[in-house]
Image (cartoon, rainbow, N blue to C red; front, side):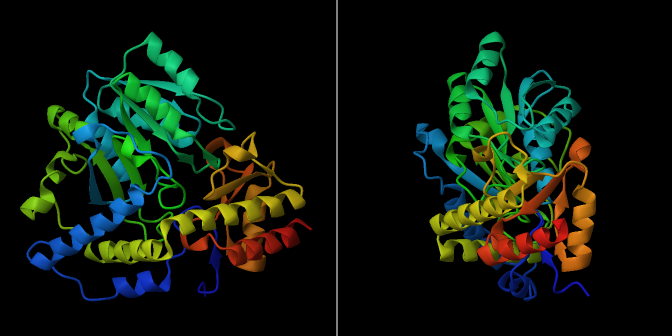
Length: 369
């Protein structure tokens, strides 16, 4: 009944046939069969190539520039909570940089550890500014800072590099939610202490896995922080591959699907993938402008190449329903207070293709008429 639907949501995204086929293959027992560990090593090597595919010059921290790649068994929220639980102690002060719902959400994870969280925020229509953050750091001492690269509910993309430079100058460790951007646009992972992604966004694999990179100085801090948690504690993962022992039975089929998805990205070429996302986003916004619709961010240049958020003033749910009922196309509305004022189109991963964007915008034009 739903096989002909076009799911243009900003995650979970459409899963390509090659990924589905790979997941249907027989899987090794991850606890006792040695080939599983070799397959895991191969997957993390592929992910490292994607994490390092930023077009900018990487920071040189000497031995601390090394990144460890981990794949955790749990949806992307697991990574956000695990990063905070592992890096933040109860006596720490954490600066939560925010221009939206997910940026604010980091403060809840921080406060759950007993640490002090201070939100340094701007309007959801704006992006984070390095000079504002620098001013805040001059006035107070912080141990860790959290931020979101792509605020999926509003479609904004923050310019991370100047912010990361400011944090590095003040010796503040960084946690970045790059769940909706990693694999679709450059992410300066080598400047980030814990950079988080997820399988169901630009990778176009099913939900269920968190991917993250951990810097050497993050590991050093993780070893010094005591946490009562086990499932959200990253420390046991540091030697997991070398010891060929994982903290829990891993999700073999999901890992196989992510491996196939990473193959698709690398076979196409990461620069080509980034260009495809930019092209799809540009087409989507040009078509939206022709329909008299505006992007939610104040400056369209602040919009992410992975998702377009459109201002529809109380019509989001009605438009979403009409798109599904009349055209078999699934879109997302806003979240929280913006639930009915923002309509979101995901052009990320497998769906970042002109023909899919055009089909979506043709249908939206029909519905608006």
